[in-house]
Amino acid sequence: MAEASSANLGSGCEEKRHEGSSSESVPPGTTISRVKLLDTMVDTFLQKLVAAGSYQRFTDCYKCFYQLQPAMTQQIYDKFIAQLQTSIREEISDIKEEGNLEAVLNALDKIVEEGKVRKEPAWRPSGIPEKDLHSVMAPYFLQQRDTLRRHVQKQEAENQQLADAVLAGRRQVEELQLQVQAQQQAWQALHREQRELVAVLREPE
Image 1 (cartoon, one colour):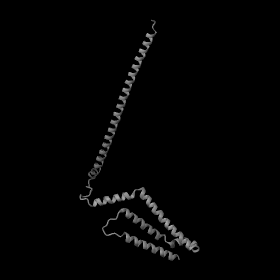
Image 2 (spheres, helix red, strand yellow):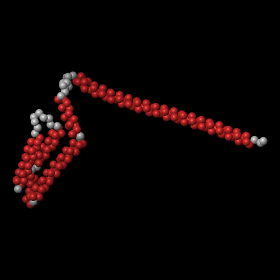
Image 3 (cartoon, one colour):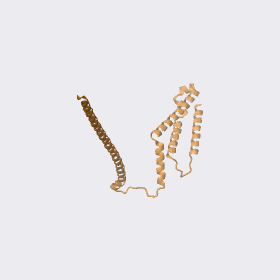
Image 4 (cartoon, helix red, strand yellow):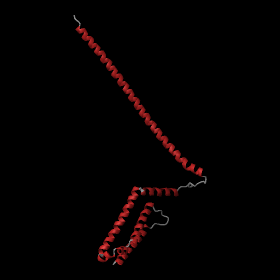
């Protein structure tokens, strides 16, 4: 029974392999995306993993249990293989999501395709390290300089806005102080007039 199960599993793997190869067959010269290649590599790895961990080897490890419960052994093996494949696929999916692999691989495919239609010759080292280093680093430093210059200009504009706001606040404070002084002087003058009026009213006739 073990040999039959192993044969059935092997034939199933072979059928899947042939189906995968027929569905994945592409005309010569057709470019396959790197994301698709990665998925194909994972599928191939799982197929080889299942083939390496065949049912025959599984029963060899648990001979006593297999002799007592062959049907249960087959169920345990099938469930183990299914869970193993699911766990591996989930782990690969987590790695792809954490590393943003699909976007990176698609960007790499785009760069390669753009390089195929580029007319100007690709960069090659001149043999003079100083010249090569300058040709590579100079554009980078110029870009960084422009970026820093834009940041400085933006910061200067923000500082100028803050300075203008501070000056406007000072002017408002000065205007408020003048208003307070004017009101205080007016109140003092009114108080003096009241005192003078009271004094006049208190004078004997």
